[in-house]
Each structure stands twice: as C-alpha cells, then as structure tokens.
Length: 614
Image (cartoon, rainbow, N blue to C red; front, side, top):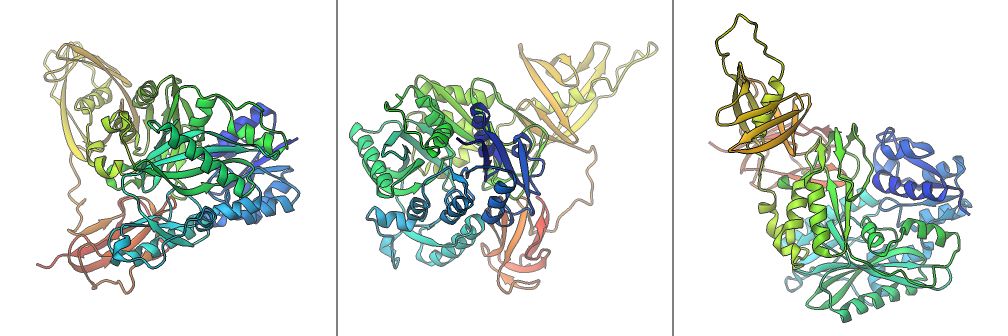
C-alpha cells in the first residue's frame, strides 16, 4: 500500500493528484523550483522539497534531484503527472532503482511509445524521409513530449530547414530531447483519442473516445467526451487499435492513443504513456477517478471485472493567461481573483493573489461541465465561463465562450483548423461601452460632498480609460440628487457596485480596482492620467516585446546598422516554454539593438528599432 506519494510536477496537475491522495489517505510530497516557492501545489502538499533554480532544465527536468527529493522526504511512490519527465524512461528506471513505486507504465513501454518515431514504426507507419514538393504540406514534430511544443506546419519547401531548426530548439527546451521527424499534414482532420486503462493482470480496457480538435499551435484548448458524430464502426476500430497499441508494449496504467480522423478513416498519431490534461471529461462521463485507478493498478490490484458505463456528455475548456488576438502571446502578472460558478468542476494550480511567471506553461485552470446531452454540456460550460471572475492578466476566456457557442462547433463540424479559420472573428473586441462610465462613477463615489451653503452644480468630472486598446473619456456630474451622467440614469453608485438605468433596463456593474487596473464585470480597463505625458513617445519602427520572456537567439550577424528586409526574423523570445519570432516590420536599417541573448524582458520593453528608408 502506498503511504506517501511524491508528485514530480507542478501546478494544476500536482494539485489534482494531491486531491485524490487526500481522499485515499495518502500523504503527499511536492517539489518546487525557486520560482514556485509560494505556488499553490507547494502550499497544499503535506511536505515540499526545493529544487534549486527556476527554469525547467534546472528543476523539474532534473530526474536525479526529483528522486533524491522523494527519498529524503520518505516517499514510497512517485507520480509524474504530465509533461516534464512523465514520458522519460530513464526517470522511471531511476525511480524504480531507488526502491520506489512508479505510478505509470513499465520503462520499456515508455521507451517504445514515448518516441513518436518508434511508436509509428511499432504500428507499421514510417515517417517521411527526403521531403519533396509533392509531399507538402508536412508537419515537423518533436519525437518526445507533447503539448504542441516542437511542432511546425511547412507549406513551402524553402521553409523546411527553419522549421526543423525551430522545432529542435523548442523540443530541447521543453523536453530535453531535440529529436524531430516529418510526417504528412492532414488538412481538416479531427483529433480523436481513446483513453485506455490496463492492469498487471492482462486486462486492457478502452474508456470511450474524446475529441480534441480545437487547438492552437497544436495544443488542445477545448476537449470533450465522447467524440461526437463518429460512426459506430469507426469507434470500434479506434478502440481496437488503441488496445492493440497497448498490448504491443505490455502497457500498464492510464494512457491515451491519439488519432487524426479524416474522410471516415483513422490515422494513428501517437500513444501518450501518461495521464492526459483532458482526463477529467472521461472521469465525468464514466464516473471514475483515473488517478485513483492509477494508484490501485500500481499497487497490484486488478481492474473491476465490469467496465463502467458511459453517461451523458462532458466538455473541458483550458483557461490560459494569454492573448489570442496577439498571436496567443502568454501573459504574466498577479492573478488577483479567480472564481468560477460551482456548476462546473475547476482544476487549477492558482489561487487569488498568486503570480503568473514566465518559466512555465500559461494554463491557469481547466473548467469541466457534465450534462445528459452535448448541447446541455456546452451551454452549461459557456455560461459558467461567461460568469466567471477573472481579474489579472489577459486570458482566453472570451475566446472559449465564443468557441463553445460557435455554430461550427455546436453542430460538431469542427476540425483542427478551426482557429485558423475563425480566430479573427472569435477575438474581435466586444468591450462593454458602459464599463468606463461605471468605473468612473465608482471612482468618484464619496470624493465630492456639498456643504449646506452650496447651491450651484459642480463642474463635470472627467476620467480617461484604456479599453481594448482604445482611449475612452467619460464625464459625470455631482448634483443635489447625486451622480449623473448624460443619457444614463444613475440608480446607485458605490465603490464596488454601480447600477445604471439604460433606456429603461437596469444593469449592474461590479467594479474592482488593483492600482491602475480596473475590472468592470468582465471588461478590463486601465485608468489613464488626465493629461498624457508628452515624453511617452516611441521612435517609428520600434519593436516591443509582446510578452515577458528571455531572448534566446539573435539572428546571425545582426547588429546596429544591419540592413534588414520586411518579415526577416531578428530575435527569438522564449516564454512559458514556447518560442516566438520577432520580425522586421519593414525593409530598412536596424538602427538600434537593445537586447542580448540571455536577457529577460518585460512586456512592452524596447527590443530594437528598424528605420525605413526616407
């Protein structure tokens, strides 16, 4: 029996595993980097062990330090979670060699399937060798890891070399393994997967299907179970292939076999020898706890003789600290408030007041809804997200709500190109036009009082806010009857609640302030000074950091005075394990280069200046 479990991971998945351990009476051990010293997963565990450093390469990817932490903390088992070392066979062996129980498949199974190239060979599929024009489009893919890192779509042959180089660099940073391969890219396919659970007594059980077609940068955003609209024959084929893959490597524990489905055919992608981020939708539909099942299997217990029955439909949305309208740029800062209605399940690694840093994945939480039908589950989740309180950095919440209500998604006609087709409309700004007025009235509350001697109206008050990249100026006036604003009747104006009568419809606005940042219901604003600083000007052609991160590369030979062409890559930033190119906006001369490799930058930092010819 497991008495003490170390989770070799961080954030949401560590907290989720700890929750099951608490229910089973298992003591928990967390590991944390210096950047995660005050992270939620380190706080909720019974014991926490420091891994000196901040980057994944120095901390969560150091298997030797993790095993040492488990031994020193008195753990008798290790759960890898997902990502980091979860599909590292050498780490699994090190855990076993230390006399600890490994919550996962045998190292040999990980070795066979963790490399996508070897997995395809096992399933009789050969990757592309020399790529020609006739092979395009193709997908460059990291052999190790997952989460969409180390992937590049190539549509022109001259782009292949840069794609291979970029994928290798990203894969090395994220997984410590730079092996990449090339495979055909299937346009407009659906990403469908099968959850499997296998014990040490020979039982391999498929637990339905999931659809994970809504993806950005090949990383899943919305997932659901079961995959809608699959013909019965195809679903049986998917189950059969998944079981065959598991039996081929003598698999044990929870795993996922992934496919692209196109034209009624299933194309094997890979087998993930670990728990998946989207496992809660399977748990909801089958009424089981997959982490608890993993622990029981590791202890040697057989699976129950009767397979659980599926009930209803479940859908999961991943909340990211990112700006989808700005090339999915990750965001950092303080998460002041995170609250989602109790109608849905929320798995998160953050709580109010936590800092979102630059070193790790941008996912804040997963929200999961379960209902008797797919339509009800989608409606339930969209409503919950729409009414969630999210104060802090920009998130993808509005994108999620619009995606869940998009006609192509609600009718189950989506595919992996959904966001490529619809991102512009899904991210079109739709701020509340009355939010600046509500913010100004809340700010003005209690600021002006009249004595009995005064019987003339006050001068109008003025406030300026930045909302959706546009400045808004609002005016209000203190009168004997209270605060008023042109065209709108003010029913109530308090520091945290404003009620307005707009054309006979009464609306409530909840207002929260964090310095210059103001949140009015779901609309974020920045309070601006009444008179702008005339010095706050940037030279034309200034390139600003779109997100916080580290400069990991500068183009070869690039220096002040270099001639550059429009679209030419100049710098590479790495943020939250993803690499982002900074390109020249125009053809001209690089007049300034303000950064060097290894330098950390904040959002809005000046990186370089490109001057166009006069």
